[in-house]
Image 1 (cartoon, rainbow, N blue to C red):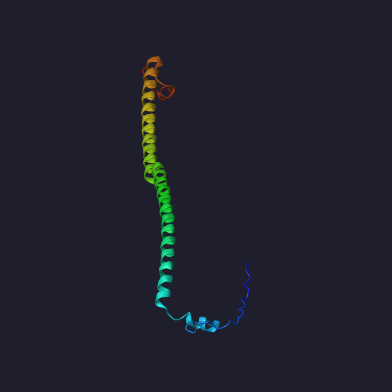
Image 2: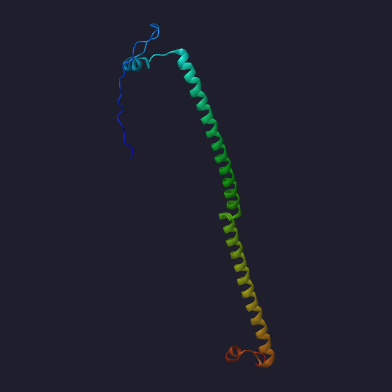
Length: 143
């Protein structure tokens, strides 16, 4: 926690200078003159402040450039990672392909069952006049 200390100004009485054209200012006069513009004094002070500002700005600019470069690298890495992951379209494509494969397997299963039934009927007809179902109905090769 910061505490403010009251600054106490001690007024020191100085003896008058030997040259009367130069006179010491009191504290009140100094405070009053701070608002006035003395072009030579303010210009020199302004140049110094501007130089310090330019130096600080260039240092900040250097830091900002390095931060921007770092952000560009991170953004590029994230973009590569994002493109490496499957998208929603990729997921839909895989699901569609899986559905097509499933439909083909079901179609082949049905086709094979039909062929198996045909072969079974032919085998039963050769072995004894048909399947047990056909014998009950009175059909088959022996009838």
